[in-house]
Image 1 (cartoon, rainbow, N blue to C red):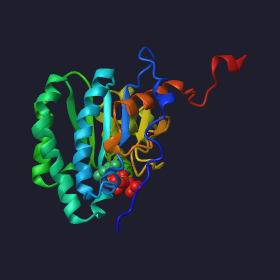
Image 2: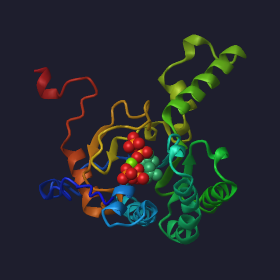
Image 3: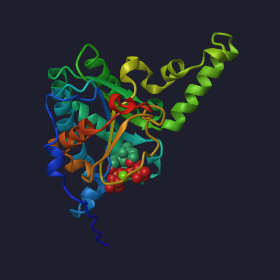
Amino acid sequence: MFRFFPQKEKYQRSTTFNFNPQGPIPQHVAIIMDGNGRWAQNRRLPRVAGHKEGMNNVKKITKQASRLGIKVLTLYAFSTENWKRPTDEVNFLMQLPVDFFDTFVPELIAENVKVSVMGGIEFLPDHTQKAVYDAMEQTKDNTGMVLNFALNYGSRAEVLAAVKSVATKVQAGDVTVAEIDDDLFSNELMTGFLAPELRDPELLIRTSGEERISNFLLWQIAYSELHFSPAFWPDFDEDHLLAALGDFQQRNRRFGGLNKEETK
Ligand code: IPE
Ligand code: IPE
Ligand code: MG
């Protein structure tokens, strides 16, 4: 049966124009790319057509993010829970990185973008693993934006692995319990390969109107600004990204403290 999934509004024009090119740009932006299936179903297309369109959109948003001066773009591409989907859909999703990097690596090199991947990569099919490792190798000397894919990623698994790693170090006598602090722990997480000041996204965007985290970066988003866009991921265009950044620029980030004028 055909079912139409309404998008609340395409984007808020007023928010778009709040973006100030001279204003602060978050160094690390993370995106939960959601709504591919609904985008396709609204067009009476199979869900996987939405994933293909979503992949093309990754290319556009990557280039725009890099040109805006964002330093790290983390994209949630496949969660540890997404294995629950029908086999055909999972197989299609596992083929996407192959197609993506086959066609996009030359442009990533031209843009000076460096690819990284975090998640349970060893559980992915061989062709998917090869595609991501080849892309990382081919872009390893690039010094611009880091394009970081979360692939077979789940934050609870990530936190548990970090806890186990720290516990093993304590057991071996390499770390004392008193030494376990934010810095030590964040180093053990999958974002630990990034410079400490880049590990936590300043801005987390979720598309498709859903307002939940779905097991993404639970530790790292402790103080992130959250932006929920009504657009399905394939429709999330450059204006939507500027709207999200404009929204970020209007936020008052206090980190539990007070603004200067409030202390008077
Ligand atoms: C996001 O789109 C892509 C992945 C989770 C792999 P969805 O496939 O979740 O699309 P909806 O949410 O069903 O519309
Ligand atoms: C989150 O989207 C995962 C990715 C975007 C890869 P889902 O569509 O899987 O999340 P839920 O099921 O709506 O929470
Ligand atoms: Mg979804």
